[in-house]
Length: 158
Image: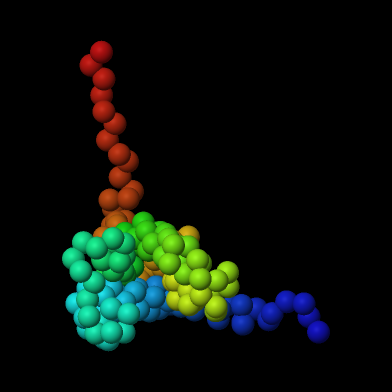
């Protein structure tokens, strides 16, 4: 049995990679938006499933929900993806260590599975980028003529 995959399988996986990365980014962003919207606006079950909202400006809950809503939207759209994903990842790491870890060491025991999963998912997005189907790519796409022109060099009058 060969130690490597057949070439056609590897090519199929390589061809699917951009679509899977984009789908992953969109799903994670959408789920994060839902968490922020539930805490800020009381929709989708509200804050902590109780139907309410987090009071305006309350530290850290309201700010975390704002990061979830805005950061999730940026990641979903693929706009400023790496920075937004890094901020989202950091907020989930903060949530895990300040809210969950004090109750038990293991996420299954302290209720921190979502925080851990979001933290690592957003870190992966920050490292891997938005993928080819993102607003970032659309805004930075250059025409072939523009990219072929050399940049104008400033002249010195000294």
